[in-house]
Length: 105
Length: 120
Image 1: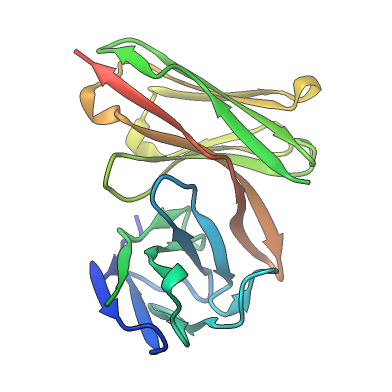
Image 2: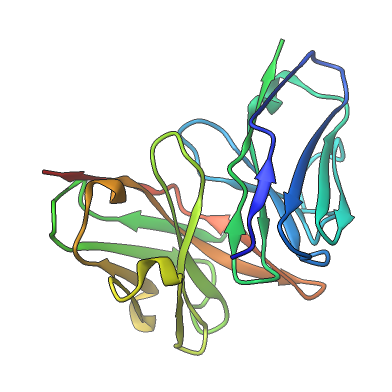
């Protein structure tokens, strides 16, 4: 299985720029996607194919990377962005990262 | 408007069988694939398996032969059935649509999920 590793938590102030990383145990080309999940809700797609913004998602969100290293950037961060962010690959079946909990100071 | 909705029991007894229904609207099961993903309380997401638009299925090997996915296209429903439940099967179970663009496959719509507790 392709294992995805994310840092567990981050804390930033509103208005700042934050980058959330995801590292794959083997290359997934650009088959990496990002989701936002708020407590008690289902995941919401933000980015697909490493860098493509899903329709309706604010342009404050962006993604980059290929191979094994990927980044989700939020700039600027807003209070409503408090959530857990998951990466997910679809290059070798389907696996998810453990999630990065983003808190605002 | 694309929607998915899971319905199932809140509580299942240890070693018994779990059955959950995913009812979809706004798209056809013969056009899109629908997958099952679960999330134990406070933990991450785990892909379980898929119902392909052509009627085939695919399963996460972690569930071995415990898991079965089927569908009724006339009712726009996909079914999950998993036997021999253990306490670590306690989780919220989601169905999700697999979308596609630029050759990428990703989960573009999700149901709200149904929380299932396995009780001893």
